[in-house]
Length: 72
Image 1 (cartoon, one colour):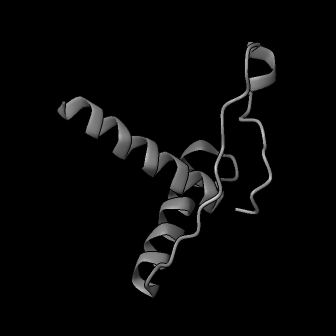
Image 2 (cartoon, helix red, strand yellow):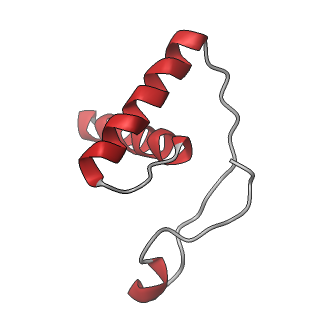
């Protein structure tokens, strides 16, 4: 999470504005760090492509935001 703006895969081919990105810092306990690492490894095995910790966090935040909006 270096703060550099990057396009999501396929964003350039869709047209329109690229998605907005923000930089965040996350303080994790060793237990949580281990869980994130395991989730990334599991996702890598499932999809067959490299899954970074940034992507794991991004997907978790998106899922959380979706659950909040569904509760309204």
